Length: 449
Image (tube, rainbow, N blue to C red):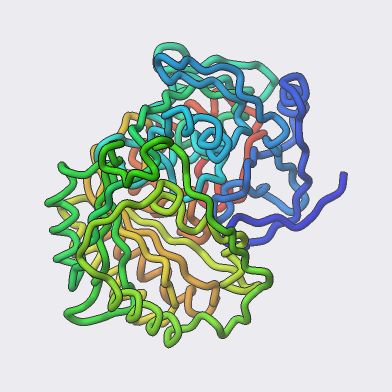
């Protein structure tokens, strides 16, 4: 079998892998029956190594050939589709009919199987929870080739362990999902500036009961009194009578816009503390307190409009670092995290802060009531070697945790404290996979199983 270099969206690390793409259920069953190690992969939008093989030359099961939508109930929004169907395909098919995803990450180029495995979340976590809470069932091929129908009522422990389980319980064949009716394809968005982290946290907390979708851009290179300054975006779906006349006839139609692309890798020096600091100053300076209508594409998926945007970090790649802090330690934990990153000189212009609601019942649930910060940093090994241990100390001291779908370099000894129900997950996983067939680079690095 031929191998080729493979990475996540951050383009680091890079592992040689053999991709196999089952075209139907029988082929997927055969792959999980032969005893060779493997891990499932969708569109490759996890940032680090969750969808990479555990060792060089290992197998990756590509889900994209199984991407059929099987049924939809127009009265309830109940969709059944194969695991390789993308969120983009669901939006294209059902938004014109008045239905949208119950929650969505910052890119629509994610498969259904990947969304379940990573238990993705969006700007509405404080209202609607994670993706997994809207899943009604899924069919899972487990090692040995058995197909299990899993739901909150049937094989419930496996259902819970698979949601957020990063593909370590089996290969997801199909998913049942509840879509949500929306009045239009537009959000009424209020923009507010905050001069520092404390002000931003206060504004997010103050408004989370009034807005379904909340998110903030953070300037993570500022320091001192301006540390954590940023721009808050508060959104609710717009009613038809709130749209301008030209959009009322087709309120669920998205405006057409020209697609952009990054055609080549930027040189390594293009993103540095000086250029990013200048960009951040301009972006913050142009921000105004105002309210405007923003279409779903621009509000939920601003970076999807730019193909290959990950090339701006150059061939060296980048990591995405996403952490959660509970309410009781959020301000202090976030302040120390931002201060450490600012001092490191690693340049992140994509830094996002979100308010989170209560945890779900899945053992590897990432979020709970508190705040989550996600940001990109270029891969500069000598700087990351110094910064990452400091960030991990901050997490340990403030009851924080990292998100597996975006991790590339966490230390394994921190994981049991971050995820106190890890042994509950391991018990289910071990029963399903006693021969250790399911393995990823992430699971091996962090000792998840």
